[in-house]
Image (cartoon, rainbow, N blue to C red; front, side, top):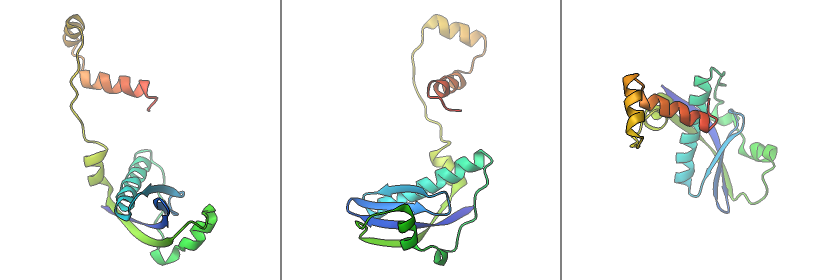
Length: 142
């Protein structure tokens, strides 16, 4: 299912900033307009995916005409270095994007002592799951 939200694009000296006013001022950036748009898609997909998984309420998108980039810039206190500003709709199929970028598994090769492998194999240990669980603990990820 396609999700579409308005985003404010601000051209600054070093590239573009992108703000999603409907989504708690979610922000990203890019050095070029194309990069900023790609980052906006990634940012939107990640935000919606995470909120959906956490059971959070996702606000409905505003109409493009209801978003005033000048007002958004003022509310955020953006300085006068903004060269150009406009609103654009950013769309993403979150489920499809997640399959390619968030849920895709990668193969890792590792080495453990033979004795440890034997004991773990005898107990039908799922090595991939153990590694995932250990990495989450090490990285303080829920």
